[in-house]
Image (cartoon, rainbow, N blue to C red; front, side, top):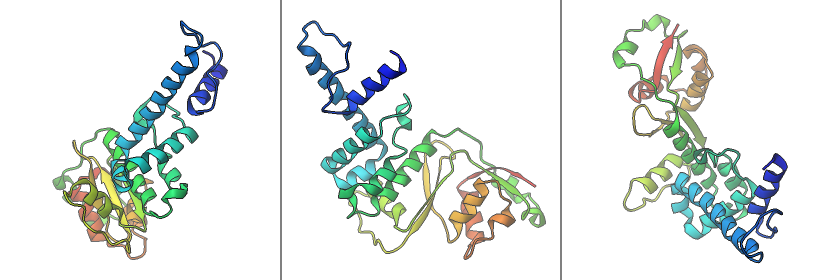
Length: 247
């Protein structure tokens, strides 16, 4: 199958009104359309199920019917670009933000962004975090020009909604707790060992960690207004988010 034939085949899979591509055969000519329709449905529902597994809290928040309809629209507008299924869904949060029926849930897209970050952290490369003893051995007067290498799994998500609280109560609580939507939360996501962890970032923490990810020195990263630097240090150290420090 050449690239043009592949494109035609893929488009037909995602368009419920399209005829089967030419060249398909069955033992009975009339079965081609029926069998291709079955295959099309299997592909679409397989991708919907993959999204449901990647965004379980979004699924819980809106219910199976709503999520299925939203995911189906996404699948038909954004087919996979890679044969690796765990890479599918990166654009789903952006799609959710524009999905008309989700406008009454303005936090849903950011919850999806958090869930995508959790998935990325889970599949990130392993690395050994620095021990607290190694960190404490760094002279205080050289810390400002130090560059922190963060764990490959580190992800950060910023939202004007309490996305960590929403995610937590829908993940860990037997009975979902009421969450006030009138505050934002910035989240640090990482997998220092086997399990993914999500931590609330302190004031200014998102800008601070973002600058560190880009290779900035501690001094340069600390320029954010209202930064609680001691709290940021404490979180990064205790969460084992640092794998190397260079001057």
